[in-house]
Amino acid sequence: MRILPTQIRPTSGQAYIFGLDTIRNGQEIRRIIGYVPQETSVWLDISGYENPY
Amino acid sequence: MTYSSNTPVQPILWLGVFGTIMGRVYAIPIGGLPYIDYITPGVLLQSTIFVSVFYGLTIVWERETGILKRLLVAPTSIYATVIGRSVASGVRAVVQALIIFPVAILLGGELLPRPKGRGFPAASSLLRRHSPLASGRVSREFSVSVSLAQTYIRFAMRRFRSHRTGSGCSLPTLWNRLANPKSPRGRSDRSSK
Figure 1: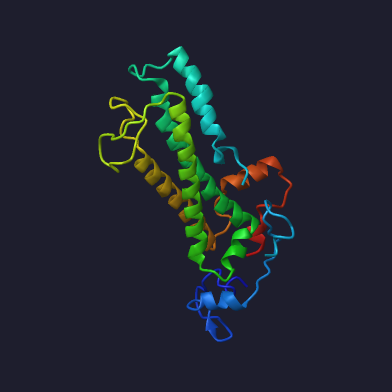
Figure 2: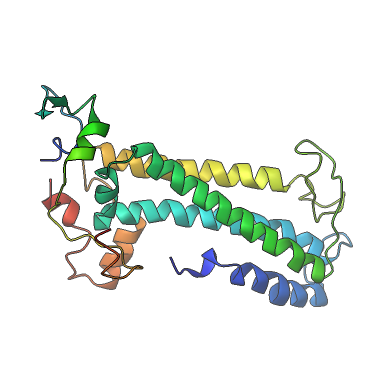
């Protein structure tokens, strides 16, 4: 799961999202995907309304 | 972000309270220097280093809480996260120094317009020439601060890149576990692997 949002590099093989390589086109991939990680992660020093932005 | 070493209150206390008292009691032989001239470069160094250490620790802390994950999947460059934080800590350190300088001058510190040695010729120092810390200047303090921040950021990034999560134990994790041993926070990295 963490290979697809370009967080870690695959040790072998390739992964593609919409035909974009997760190694070379990480910037474009991050532009079109949304990623919901397992744990809740919020900034504690801003309000709850500001957090989704 | 509220942290005592990240505000100029602590260095002002060092200069105003500690410096004044120690200047009165003459406890340390410093070669006839005014104590404020003796302590101010150290306070400057301490403040800038604390700022960079704090910002480096923030990255480790953000990694633990998962905020770094959110930043790294955002549609921005990964380098923006690192460089932006470095620039922010640099600005903060400079602002702190700019606050400490007038405070030290108000307390009687002497500003040398052109200190000896290498570095920026325009960089000023609160030191006299025969001080044991005479080479400690703003430029060197900032370079130390920057390199320290880089070390911390590299440490954080290396921990992030590596697959061996949980191989080490960073200081915030340690604090968390010491503070509330039953809290699941800090173990989230391993479970999400």
